[in-house]
Amino acid sequence: MNEKKISWKKLGLVVEAQSDLWWMQSYGMVPTLDKQSDGSYKIYFSGRDKNNVSHIGWVRVEPDDPTNLIEYSKEPVLSPGERGCFDDNGVTPASIVRHENKIFLYYIGWNPGHNVRMHLFGGLAISNDEGETFERYSRAPIIERCKVNPFLNTAPYVLREGEDWLMYYVSGTEWIHKDLPRYNIQMANSKDGKNWNRQGKVAIDYKDNTEFALARPWVLKDSDGIYKMWFSYKGDVATGSTYRMGFATSNDGKSWNRQDQLANIGVSESGWDSKMIEYAAVMDHNGKKIMFYNGNNYGYDGIGVAVEV
Image (tube, rainbow, N blue to C red; front, side, top):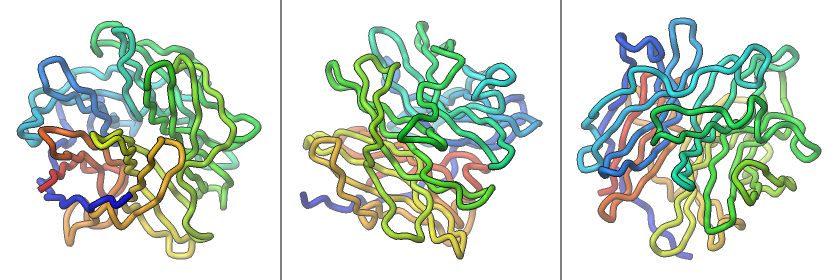
């Protein structure tokens, strides 16, 4: 397949911390899109409170002008779980699926570690009221450790096609040291979006022995029938490089051709995304792509937007 590069125009930082929202004193991490009945979009994301703990809320935007923020949620729709659960130290969105008049919110649960810095697993919360409130499907993660995935398993991006559900998720393959996990992007399948079969099948693998992070997949099945994935990557270990945007294509959603050069969006010369760029969420609007993404320090300053030109 001869995929063309998209030319992007950055429009700057659009979602920033809100001093009047207790759950968003800093950060706007991992934008996650959901189209509303009126044509607007909710961008779910995690902000952090004064204790640096992540909660999931949203901002509503108008795609004709993606810099136009219509409203923020006054309260988070999901907060950390019970003490001792996999998500007791923070929650961050990963993907949204609408199914049978319900909204499935797949999310990342944060939990501090001891011999390693953190544990990350994927959870599910479900809304029956168009996203006004969410309830956890389970207090346990839907992708925990298992025989083929003994380390972290997180950032589930889920697609539903007919009766089949497909998940792309970040899975740890080792811990290089206490503060540095190594992780690639793997795949799982399901018949109900809740119970997942994992065989350790890799979607996007490391390009060499020095790469150590492949993060946050975002997948669109385009009008031409081609699956397109944006993800984030970094390496090598020696230099501790920061995230850049990756890209891959697939004819069937299962076998992927990595083509990072086609992402065609990088760090800026200065400002909030001058050191790193990551966690893209991409949508189609009137035949053009719109990308929401994070920059320096994993989204500390908030969420920016770029449009196809």
